[in-house]
Image (tube, rainbow, N blue to C red; front, side, top):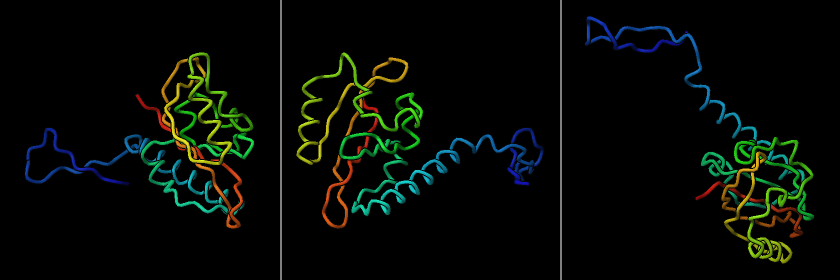
Length: 168
């Protein structure tokens, strides 16, 4: 049992009364986020080992700062997304695997921005943009995105990693 001090309606204000903590619900949201980040870091580490990636991206800090991570192959098909992807887009992780990230774009998404991203990806260059995306329910949101091509220890580009966050 975990005890918390109680200060309300006690006679001896100098010494707080001790009451038992009967439920962990107050800690659940923070604990759940830490577990999600831990699981995401493990999965990114597994992908890095499997594909022999060389990257200096601090994923733990990015995930703790509420960024979403999306990994695609060179054909730009999603192979992995962080657990925060669902909160940002409304799509379950399983719904996104195998799709091209442009499935989040729609009628009002700026064509020039889409073409600029495509051009930079084709040249295997880092690209950054602010793009209008659509959630599963059709609602739009602005997404700040930075996409980096990732190479293995032999210098061969194997994947793209997108770091995304909803912005104003």
